[in-house]
Image 1 (cartoon, helix red, strand yellow):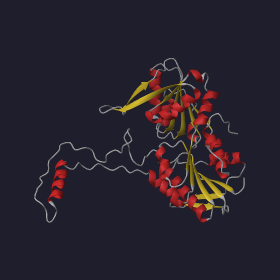
Image 2 (spheres, one colour):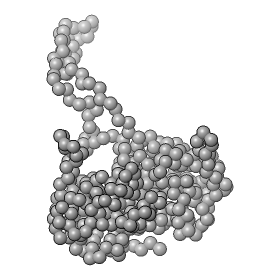
Image 3 (cartoon, rainbow, N blue to C red):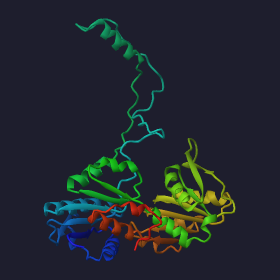
Image 4 (cartoon, rainbow, N blue to C red):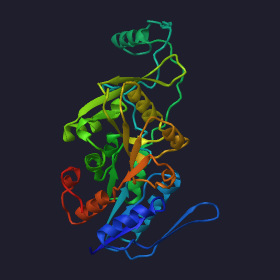
Length: 371
């Protein structure tokens, strides 16, 4: 492949090497270091003038350091006159911080809570200056309908548009990622964003590695991932169940879980995009076992597994947990429950097709075998 360079950040060098191996090209030469004050230093050791540049950096580990390193690498290639710069971000950082919180209906949430006790302000109906009487009357009616100002509610910063602006300002012309937690992130960019899906890999794993999968049940551990889980269930012609969780107002537990569907005497396959603290997925596995499930599999796209997640999984009702290598998996090797499926074929094929101007629709088709 000519006029193409693939560089890798320091977050996941193994994935970069695997992608380049499948493309049949060497990894682009860089020097990534830190100064004594922990500032990031980037040196591009290749001439990228009039070349397409792909930079692979996953938003995991030291997230902020990796994000800044990616920005500097993008900007370094832009200044060096690269023809096109594509940021390949298998796990997108800050993807769980939606820019604007919304209700289930799609309407934006109010910034201030409703007042507890309405108070009618004292208003004079006398005209002010040369303002017409009808304007004063409208203003009075509006003020009469107002209530006492609610107490200030601390504002929660949303970083979605900020991360998008940083990447495009640094010089990224295109973004490739996988299984965005919040689909609205694609709309934050002024450049193309290809949100690849791990669904074909998950379907292949289920077909090849789970015995009698036709009799199993696909389960979504929350309502947010129901669309992803139902698409897999439809593709494999399997039954579907949903675990609905509601926040308790007065309880020592954070959520109350409720199963919608019948899993008695059947294997269950939990499908989710992110496993961080493992709270949701381990609680879901426990609920499935309590409702008569024989065996519980869990398949997730991005295994962050922070805090004591590994311990929780080991002590949970999950029999086998399957994760992708979108982030480094050194911390998962000590667990016999965890299996890995490779997403390097998806990213390498996406890079090849984008470089030659081909369609990416094939990557969403589970019936197509990546070689």
